[in-house]
Length: 119
Image (cartoon, rainbow, N blue to C red; front, side, top):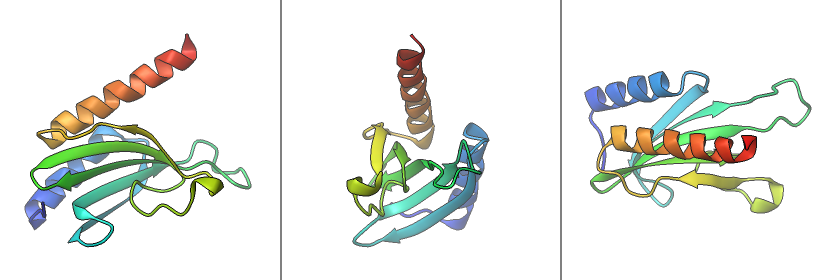
């Protein structure tokens, strides 16, 4: 699914509001060998002064008529270099009917993951 300019603007604003500590937001609105339509991602670096800082990404993308959300480390959910250098999918929502459903589902998955770590 591709989005028009107004839909892109609303999507970017909504996702930025949902994940305010993520920065450097980028998007693509193409169907090609690496994208199934619109894709938006932002980055969070918890310790940016480290020599090799960990980079976490939130990505939301479209597939035909649905949305999905992803939490990854290393790169956003499309351009994978190699698991040998630390790129990995951490969480994926699966197909969601709307962007809002994908945001809500991913936030719940993130909370569940960190609850498991904090005991």
